[in-house]
Length: 190
Image: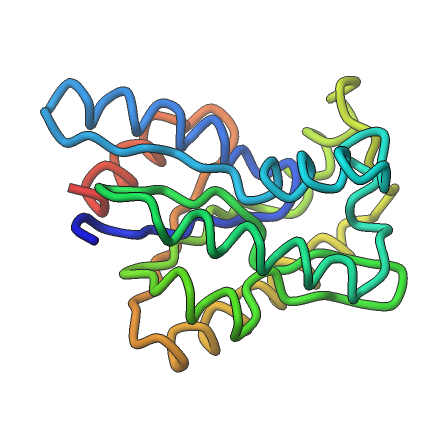
């Protein structure tokens, strides 16, 4: 397979999808094509076909073994895609029994990422974004919970890098500075 495999992560509400969408548009204009694959969408489609969930926000409540099986299926399918690929996912998922690594060993072995990018911002901004988004059903979390999740993401990203030999990059996406986050992302993906 040719091309880069780039994993882009961030906690819910950080604005990861907005940064990815605009970065891909800018890269296309420069003649650097990327395909964006949402890891969770693939998992959700399989879970829906098997009548495990009704909506996407129920995914994090599935038992650990079911989530593992869905992760394996998604990583195998994505690994077969040729060209530059952005894998839009979460470094970890907060479940009722604790944090679940979003990219465990069996997923990383399949994907073989070149780089992992964490999109981050201040926890209070994420909280405000979550509260103002009526399109999603999210668990209520406070500032400290969101910060703990971002800290855990940094820790697992470091372990992913140790396992795969890829690099890790942090991109800040504060309120009203989307263009700066996009520029940082484009420079990283070129």
